[in-house]
Image (cartoon, rainbow, N blue to C red; front, side):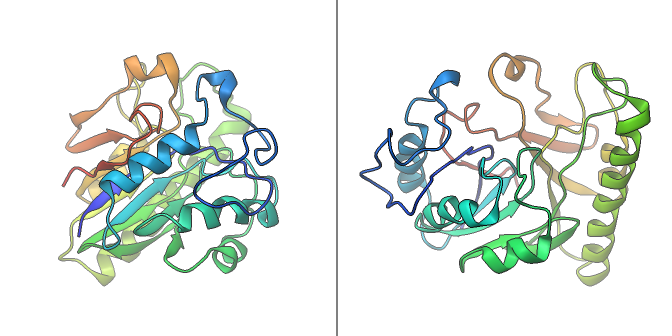
Length: 243
């Protein structure tokens, strides 16, 4: 049994589909071709089937589906569910359907879990997650609107890790964020502080695409391991989580 990760699948099926024989013209609500992700769902499927076994677990930190409503997101969830392994999902900035954690969990198929400001266990590790947010001082940061969301996300991460450590103090901790917890311009953040306080081993994040990959901070940094898992960064192939 192994832990894998991949984020930012950006699926948009508009009806129930199988793993194969997808009609690109009729079955896709929002094609990703404009970003150079031609038929990227086929690439994800083929790579996933190559590396992930039924007993493995795949962590997916955000931007799973473009759907605005849960009824439509279900088509994407069902497609992911048909792939091997247990799946643990957390929200991203484009997960507009995820207004209610309870409703998302009621919608997910079996073998799939949704974590948001809480945690689960997988392969002997604590998996805690929340969405994250833009960092103070980043271009576009608006103190009047972003600060409240940022502080709330910090609190949600701390709530998840506090509960996890209370229940399972002996287990190592992995965090799923969608936004990066640091950038070259912002070398530290409250997300990093909280993860250091709770001795997090690895932080998975996504959100970054294209040219932004070049400046992403990855590897050992600030007392933990940072791992970027945006699917285009990974060439659409789930990768082992750094343990």
